Image 1 (cartoon, protein in one colour):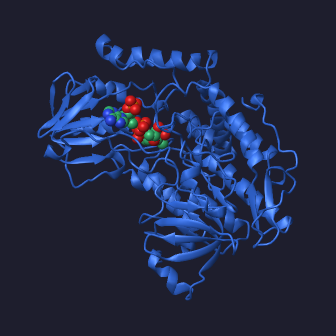
Image 2 (cartoon, rainbow, N blue to C red):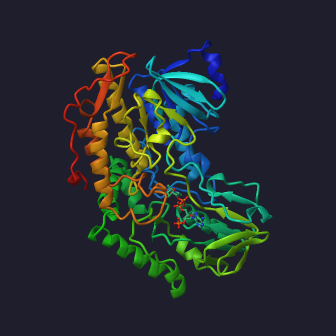
Image 3 (cartoon, protein in one colour):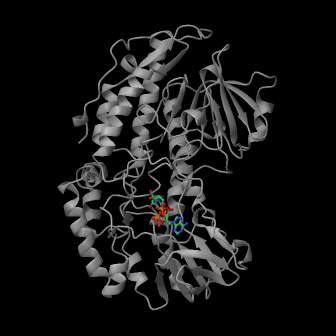
Length: 522
Ligand code: N01
């Protein structure tokens, strides 16, 4: 079917093109939310996607070697479980196929409009609706807006002096241009995070030389084999085997990996494993010293990859640790004056993750600009709702990235919470609901105390806004997140406007907003 954005005005002529809900983004969050809405009996919704297809990061990242560092049994929806007995870690293409399959099987295609970037969303107080404007100038109305745009989709491109002088191709890992054949060339890779670790072995297999420019060493853990062994296949063949495996992964990640984020002894076993792996994988002491991180493990997202270290040790692969001073016609120059020849430069330099919802302009009640509210870093109640922005919800919002487990699973929890909010709105007969400032403040206090117990504040990474605030990861276990969503539901933390035109919302049940306890974490 034709899912292009331009179809919208043809469907419902006239100025008031109105939907119950508009979901922005068609990655894991948007597709999952579409399914949740449909299953809840809400059929009058659109999913607007800026690019020309579903898939989010799995559509954007087509660099050679792209795959997921979370096994697909866990990195999939519980309502559409991954059931392959052979492959533990499918590649980018298979994950994209999975997501496209869910969208088609669950009947989402009629709701989907691709190539349809949203430029603004404004709460029209006198009408009680959201007005959503697309970049092409289409005007849509909705009772509810759900942003599901993810955190890792806007490339972070450093600006080096002399860039214009460089004669070869340059591209970011998430904007891979496969018209350029890099076989037999000298390639520079800037960055040493997960994307660099995944691309390096594939590039090194065919390039004449690869130079990896490291600003900060990342902690690396070995990744289990891509395919299941015989024993695992036999277990998965048992009745309930797949479900059991998913549960084991979920609780295993929450028990073993989540505690790595906290200061103190809880990270020691994993750090010991990382150090053991480093000694085992790299025999050259100088190279080993150069890739040994100088910050606590977990300070940045841990790289899970078993090919990165061995590839760094290849004779035609060179690790450059001197900072990049500038680009020249023929490559890169570092601050020690060394010239590094390059035919092509790959930016594996990450994403503008702390800039939530950019470049969209979002205005709530009384014309308040979300960008102004978030000028010192984004924040949202449980990563989902914002005071002053009625009937607006976020998936993968601030401080809800699970650094230790499955983000599709976190999003499923958020989808259920959003549905619970909509049900509560209907139960109390309200036209609009929003989280109270008091609930938000209490949550923010808890959040800041919880973040202070983590290893994050000192290390610079995509977890932090330029103000220094940690805005992206969730500072506790997935178990705790679930418990907090269950405990702090809309009936105690939201307020409601009984009629659409009620500008001043009345407090609902939030007379004594909950106090979050630091020992909620863990
Ligand atoms: O980006 P990153 P990524 N000069 O931000 C360096 C997810 N992901 O695309 O550490 C020199 O981790 C920067 O250096 P430093 C995953 O959640 C998932 O690799 O800031 N270097 C760093 O080394 C991951 O965490 C999968 O000092 C510069 C690198 O670039 C997230 O995406 C696969 C620089 C950026 O690392 C981001 O990963 C891939 C400069 N000016 C990614 N600017 C899965 O498997 C930046 N750097 C699911």
